Length: 305
Image (cartoon, rainbow, N blue to C red; front, side):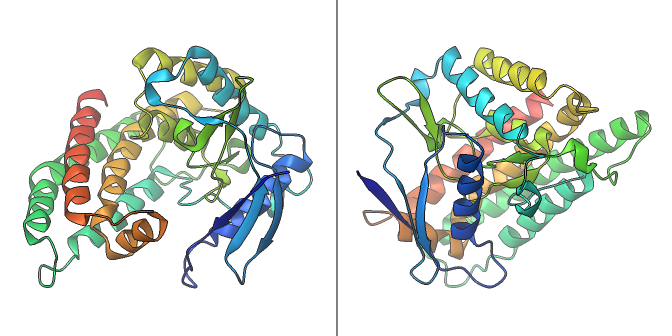
């Protein structure tokens, strides 16, 4: 039998233990009968390594995704939701950057913005790109964030609620967080196995839906996006105000994704990319590409919300 050994970068004390989170989540899912994820075998936190079954399958190009693939993805998430009350679920952590109020999303975006703004000019390998980043944030991003935030607050006020309302436990779900076909393999049988559960945990299903639809690696057609949203909403019947909450947070998570795309400007993210890369990384080229992607996504979010 073949196995895969996965190495995890060392983390600081304040960072998420991605090894333990991934192994515990996959162990929980397998024990409760979900087999569309890799089977966990063993781990060693000292070595920063975990071992999983080797999934015999092929990567899934974005242009090859079908309605059946979308249905499989939705079934996987609905199946995970149905395990929320099972033994051991309460011991699982919150998902990475889980947000249980609209205000928490505002704060998350603000924190990401602050880190990008704090980047120094001196000592930069790519000072021109840093200047382009600053111009993008000041000229394009800040006005869009202010405009969309005001719309969110006014809409919530019109509905008789506020951005500070906390999501009840009964309205939360277990979510892989970084979920999609970019983290999946197709077996020869056509079955899809979903990978990468480092950020798994309790989260808002509206965030889960938004992240799937917005993820820059997915590039889904509007038809497939709508099919996914419809499937999830059918599987999450009984979740109060999910459609309304999705309407509010979708553009906010679009704004957040713009900043995630710009992580390549942060020193710690550059070092992780270099850790995971098999070949030397041209950071300047990567940053230029990411800045263009962030600008394109911002235009989309402003046009859609």
